[in-house]
Length: 430
Image: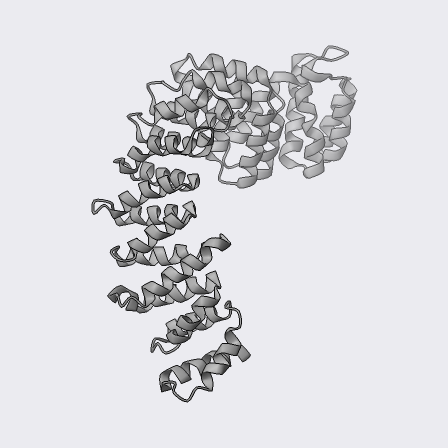
């Protein structure tokens, strides 16, 4: 046994990591640091040190082979591996392997360290490995973490760890802290609970809508938007409506998103009421316009049409943009007609070049034949950028090329429109 260790040391001095792995694999270690022939602690520490050398300096395959040694060395492996993942100066691949190995240990300290890494890692692969290692840890870690919830100094990290594990066994401990004095703990617990389909969670979300902390209300709104389908849609709207007037803009924004997901006329009406309010900031009005479009019903589009008559230019441009993104075939014609009527309404805002560009783009995205006439009329615009947007839009309209050729043959065309059509046909041929 000592001879094997000596040979391993020689291989390490030669930086022959593949040979070192072969020697380490010959040691009579079984899982959890127990051996067929008892090793002295000093010998185990030597093996640990050698294996760490391979993790730090070997190639991928050599690291992969060396990683098999650490579970055999038991919990003595934990501290040096945690030190590696906490070392921001260490190579990313070394930290990646250390994270992967730590996933083999059912230990609360390991779980908390992995959570801290998951929260701080800027590298996506490293963060994914930390999450994968967490999910690999078994129920015993959940039990240990649940015990840490009673200790103030470790409660927050324990909740974060439980939130990342995302297994049904975490529901009960997470439910135990939804009324914790710390808002950060309440919000983390609620955000994690939303991942589970459990009838006990919905009342928690409804109650949290009244929480004094905005961060908690926001998570409750998100959760109700995702899990509220088990309730009547009208009931969910009634729960969410007051949050559209929340003092916190993020809560208002998430409430709009949740109502948009519901896709009901009642949700659209609630959004439209706040959109009309003079007290609603422009940034939030833009969010409400987007949410109205997500509703995707004829009533929601009618509300957007009404908004075109009195909203600010910024919000007006957003309405035009979202109407161009209508996807349901049965609504595309309605959206197209709304845009055409606005363009021909004579409103001063509809004559601004930037809005005409947006109108042309949206009409092109919708691709409805009824937009053909109005797009051809826009070719007469003196603004070059508007004409270029119109030409791009016409490419998406059925039979547009043939219609342009027919128009060009009309002797009654104005010179500017004739020129615009000629440019469009030239661009088309090019």
